[in-house]
Length: 246
Image 1 (cartoon, helix red, strand yellow):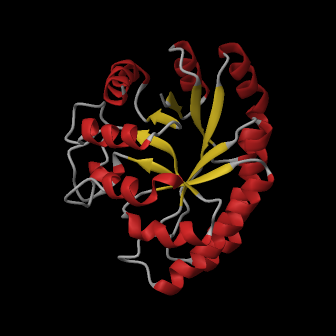
Image 2: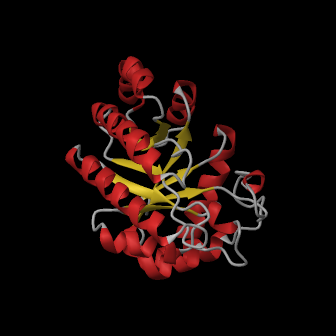
């Protein structure tokens, strides 16, 4: 059975996830200096609840400006990986937009090089770096996965419902299953914009979780799952996940 935990944007939410008895919290690691100041607080909660952490890194900024990404975002990520290592985290999720439907080949090539640099830096700290799907379909990640053997993927099943007639999780699972090392779960009603990314509890939207989880079960998925929900929404969602995966 996969390991199910909760999203925690701050220390208060780490408390909430810990009190619910989940084995891990996926925490926001956005500001290296601030996180360095709070390392002891996070480590104390880790010990108090007997949990571990996964990392959730910040958005990249302008996804079309490879020069700015190289000069600012990549160095920022390397600093964030240092504090990630201090917290004993071995897996983190990265937003790094790679949608070939709108990005030019030259941009995608440059971003693949930057992604490879970040994956290598993460590897030096013992961190598995997972790229999260935003608008991308599997074809947009396939080339980067081929070029960067150590790159892994966070399949955000809620995001996969947006900008697509069929949830793109199915093709990610069919074609890139061996790269999927983490899942984000939340529900929505489909749509074409950020405002449609509602992060509803499972069963309150249209995402076909029974079919998606059945496919993951048949493939033998055994990694981590984060419920990207409010703490009070997590327990009923966890019950559904376990039902769909059993």
